[in-house]
Length: 109
Length: 118
Image (cartoon, rainbow over the protein chains, first blue to last red):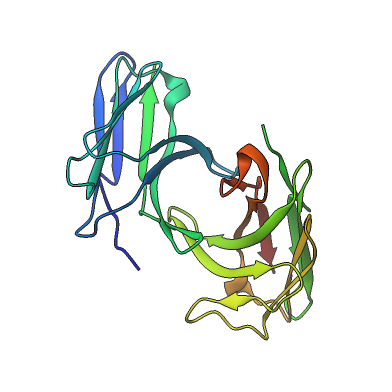
């Protein structure tokens, strides 16, 4: 099972600030996914990155897949309270998903 | 988008009783369904993988006699927590892997079931 390390574990920022969350591993991935989970709900897929060096944008969220396909980052510009949640990176382990420990983000007004 | 439902969304039971949780793919057929468990402030941990019509595959450390999984059709999988104890209290989340068409191989998550064992 590939080990996915996420950092930081917790992040508390004010509305309008920028932030970056990291997902690292020693393994090479064919693809990597980012999810957001709100309390009491299942995770919701944000993006899948497949190609090394790939950059994908989803409104104020920018996802990058490392050139070697071992790491990924999620950058949020001008964070809003609605961005609050648990951000999880995940990679396939067979057909199942292996999740990182997550980054818990709190954005205060 | 594809929808996966779970029932119940929350359940409270007494220690020693059994609880059944259903996971349904509402608008697609799922070749495989997965069951995850999530403790507070922690990530999702895979418990087992179930394929329609065959026995589930359990992850190391997960008791198959305690967590019974039945995958009776391509749209329904059930997880039964037998003789539940307080340490089984957790958030149980299923996901379904789509079969066929544009959704093939995509995994969709249910909303989760909060189990509290008193």
